[in-house]
Image (cartoon, rainbow, N blue to C red):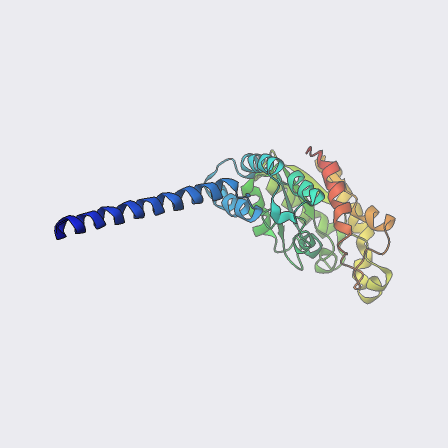
Length: 262
């Protein structure tokens, strides 16, 4: 065989081997992607991007995500934790706005940041951005959890709290009229907590204001106060915040109030 023919032979052999390697890589990549689980974090990121372009907002997009999670529960939810997957699926078309107690849904991993719009020290005062963001998402359900910090921020003035809450709800309904709104009652603080901060002893008056707002606007309330009374010992050491075991009980109440089906 001449030198030129040898070079041509080795060149063709090299190209053939390279093509085989590339085909093997592509086939393995396709197979890996087809068998990979759809993670909730990936869904959450895609949801954020989709909301920026979708005029229908969260209500339409998350219905498809809910169906995906029913058919393929995410392994990010602690493999086999059906209850946790159930909560996330049931709340997929909802948004929560509130204070640090609401933040516990994220801290303890029950719900994602795309569902919970909260901030530590959250109050009706300074919450305009949270309400606007939630209204722009057009959720099926909106759960509001305000009052604990408002007792101090409004210096115990329940009338100012009522007016402010009423105005926030009115404004939200203009932007997202089809959303169902639910009001969470204030979690009763412990006696020690009230001794340390007397203004939060007004929680019963503020809860009555929440009930009055609900009646005026034909809204439902969620009995967070009843949960803590029926399950003593769920307060954290500060007597204000609540332990992890509180959240499944609250989620059950929220799911029942909204009539979510899973």
